[in-house]
Image (cartoon, rainbow, N blue to C red; front, side, top):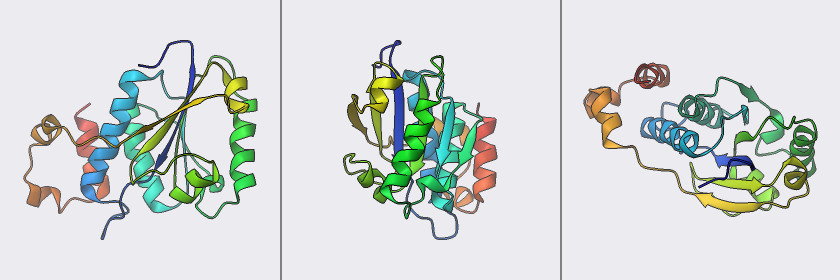
Length: 184
């Protein structure tokens, strides 16, 4: 369980590609569950940063809903084709300009970016939790790394949605978002 005096970054990989949506419909619920799980154990999330690619945008939107974070920022610095030094400079600049009262940021990106940062392999929807004593230590890369696997959708979410699988499979991502949001 994270300690209250630490600072945190989670760097997550987007969910699985969808055939007619940016990510699979089920993974929209997984992303929400991921955000909900993180919100239960981490300080309030200051900002969710994400790549401009549709699968990252959609993953970030549902994770932010679970995190109860209304501050989403799209940045090309998290795009899968961004050079390593560009990604690192973006994160370093963010950390250098972070006030002491901020304790948690979340990033949604792609496997190539995770690899460029020297973090462990992540499956779709998985994330790395970076924990440090303060932002200076995080900036100096004096942090611990924990891989967190995307959680399954809890049965109570399905129950609360009160729709059949066939009905769910016909919903747009916006309709799913609104249904999940109405559960809050």
